[in-house]
Amino acid sequence: MSTPNPQRTLDWRGVIIANPTSFEAPYGGTELGLFSLIKWELIPRRAILRAEEFSGVGYQVLENGEDAVVAAFLREYDADAFDTLFPESSSGDLTYTATDERHRGGLGGDRAVSLLLAPDATEVHPALFLDCAIGWIDETTSISHDLSEEWGIPVAFWGMPQALGRVYQYMLLERMTLTP
Image 1 (cartoon, rainbow, N blue to C red):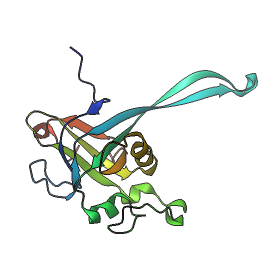
Image 2 (cartoon, helix red, strand yellow):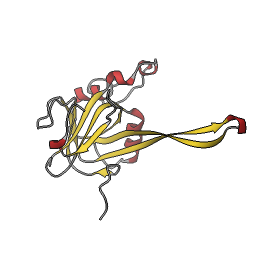
Image 3 (cartoon, rainbow, N blue to C red):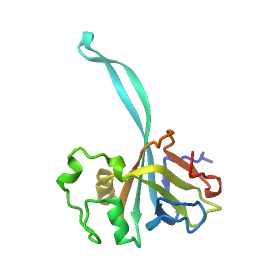
Image 4 (cartoon, helix red, strand yellow):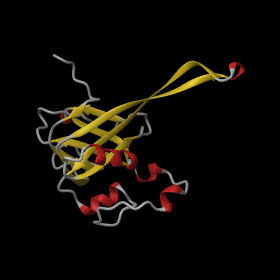
């Protein structure tokens, strides 16, 4: 029997909530849509330290934590919620148009939300909560091409550490806390 690993695909049904106010249904906040499959990756951040005196040869690797990326397909989505996910889109429009607004030095954290991926069977499946998450266009584009058999809107979020450093919680809802 394998050990549970949060870096694998989570295959359960549930709801995605932005800015939840409670971990008890209906959770408060804004319901973004339903999902039936989540891909969650913890991507290690590493930097190679190089010695200039030896023509830039790498001599050490600096471990610098992990980035959390969550991808899913929204079903029965809320068109207004789509604007929350990706402010560059038109309200209710399923096309994405790149604008200069997101390339002018703006901070992605300014549009961050707390994000809850709550399963339908809360007593059986763990939930995933990102304290601070922003919509991640690059990941969204790649999953829309990789999983073409799924119907829905592909969305992806990048988890950022909140003020005290916590990025995510992955456990049963009854054990989660909104504040670190």
